[in-house]
Amino acid sequence: MNALAEQIIAATGSRSKIKHIPYVEAYGEGFEDMERRIPNINKAKEWFGFSPRHSLEQIIAAVAAEQKAELPKANAAIV
Image 1 (cartoon, helix red, strand yellow):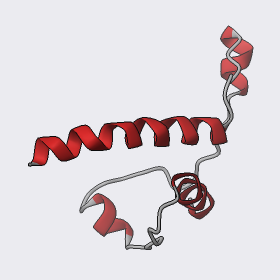
Image 2 (tube, one colour):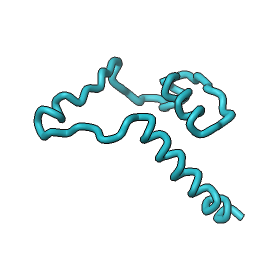
Image 3 (tube, helix red, strand yellow):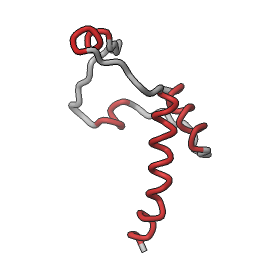
């Protein structure tokens, strides 16, 4: 997660700092999550031919650009 956060900060030119908070603070009391995940797209590729067309870096850049374009609209709505 830290590496992903660092990639996003770098891609957006943000001066944000990574802050680690307790699990219960992030998700609230009673929230349950899997203790261990190992994402794998092999079954999707095998079952229906899925193969990603974009890298993580491309996706981060596209989302960052879209959000940057939306900022003027969001700021105008606040005023």
